[in-house]
Length: 69
Image (cartoon, rainbow, N blue to C red; front, side, top):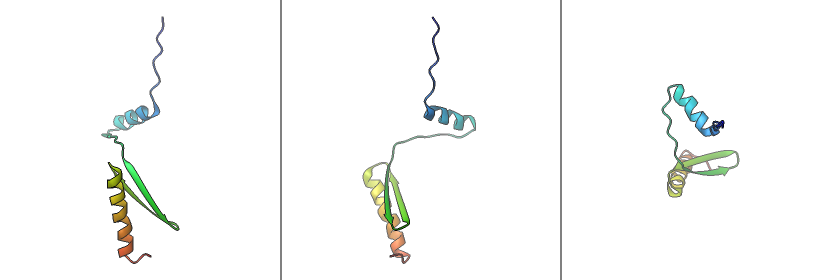
């Protein structure tokens, strides 16, 4: 009986490629929140929904402080 080697998932191949090129790879799940106003976009990222929204709030406040409407 011949056993067929399983094909690696694309994410695993990508990690192995990066690691073979000398990169240390870490993968984690995160939340991303995005706000848009016209053509302007701000993103916030965090390990929880609250962290992502807090970061988004900070990013949008920076724009407000710099004079954007």
